[in-house]
Length: 362
Image (tube, rainbow, N blue to C red; front, side, top):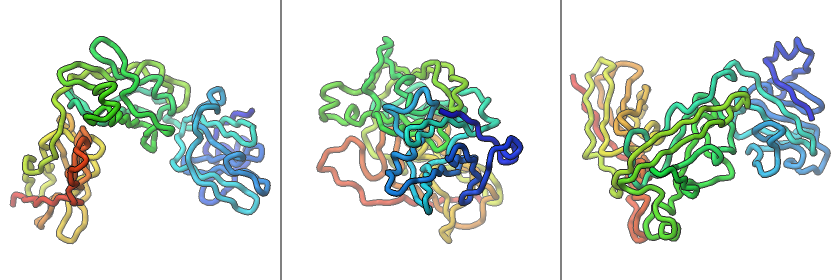
């Protein structure tokens, strides 16, 4: 078994490591394997004819000591060029993360070097935020300061009631955890069966959250960062549970500010409810008459009740519209088309977007 750390190309050459170009990525070669030297690189190995790609080359997150039984390899695409098998991961690799390459039973451990590897991992935010969330909240997002070790979330994340009892069936489990590409944001999906009334799981276990009760979502101390050298301290967010959201969002109840033309005053929308933190950032656009989208910075505030848009340039003296994707979900998974918890015979509204005029002060 071998272990190596990959350095920038110039440093690798100085150390006598062979570096070549394979496609558009710089690669370092080690014992017949061609390993990526940058996050978007690919893996390559000489492949005997007829070999099964997955038997010849698999990449796992984590050190050799944690590999490989019971763990899922990185998803990606295999291609062949001449007698070479190439594996292109579905997502960029994380600098500072330890990976284990399994090739024909041989394990090779390597790390992409990174100045950011020294950043201490910690939880920096959990959404929904604030002191109260609805009983039928569908998702939690946990944001970290630096890329984290995947496939261990069930060991560190707990949903606790006021007595400190953990609900081990609250969240859905997936073969591939729901990480952002940079592995700094983890999405936790509540089991919809605990939310939807009248289904078997709800009848058997009851809702995971009960109105009027206090809970906490916590990350216990010890979760390793991507580099495996540092661990995150514990973190806890306490909240009360409010009444469930069981009606459709309504833009007629939104409050919209009117920024002035030829200024960079922010446009502020106050929602009728709390919306999903991630959906709200990408589901609302400001569009001009020619169909182009205005560039700017979106901020979600006031515990996911406010959308704030700061344009990159001054507001033009032109007709503008606010375009809302009808799939924009509130924190309970309801959107402008239908409710998450709806009767089977309920019709889904056939809309793709909602368009509101944006008046500007002149």
